Length: 305
Image (cartoon, rainbow, N blue to C red):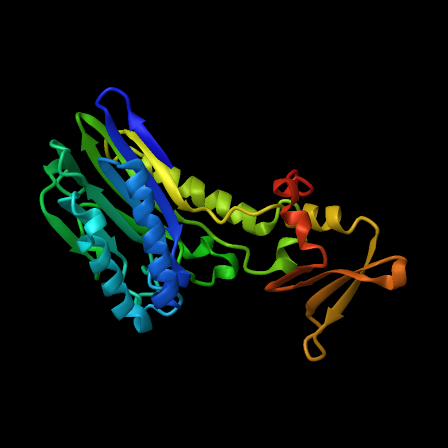
């Protein structure tokens, strides 16, 4: 999304992307992604650009370290970004710390024509002029120019750690101060659990985590300023409503594991028509026989779910 500050004529571009898959196939996906990114930059020509990434480094961060370094180097040195003579990059690379690792990456680029821009030091509680290009990684917890938190463990579904949290930075352009928050909320870990209730337990967890972030950025520790929260919210359609909409005339068959009696699969069949299978639901599988329903008319058939 792009916005423009009318008073100063400063064009601000805010971009968010879950980039986990880019590091699985850097030779193809990463090149294509960067090409599209540069095209967006060329189209909007922002003075201040913020790129918030989630799942930075992919599923296996340690194995992707070399790809991460190459990606960052490419962004900072490419011809497409040569007019951005100041940059701040914050990468959460502390993958060995289960209690702190979020796999978030925040990039900020400042055009050479932008004169007076400052970043807030949360420790010193004052603004500092932004000069040069700097990259911060390792332990971001000790970096005073941002706030980074992983959600408390009791927020996580079944209290199992995953890489979910937020990074907050504060900026001031032409006496206009604002916070930028990179956020990654919880996904639906299991379709079988998600469809049990409406709203799902995962929806409740996302709501709770978002409330936690909002409470943190408007608390009494610092002066309140405008804020923009953008990242991967992992919003979903309501699974129970979707299944009920798609399978109004279907009967359900439950498949259980032989050793634990745990439900591992749900099969929805038409009552007639030779009991045709219309939907198969597993922990990581949602297989509906007519995929066009999600595309036709922009998915209006299930948009109310």
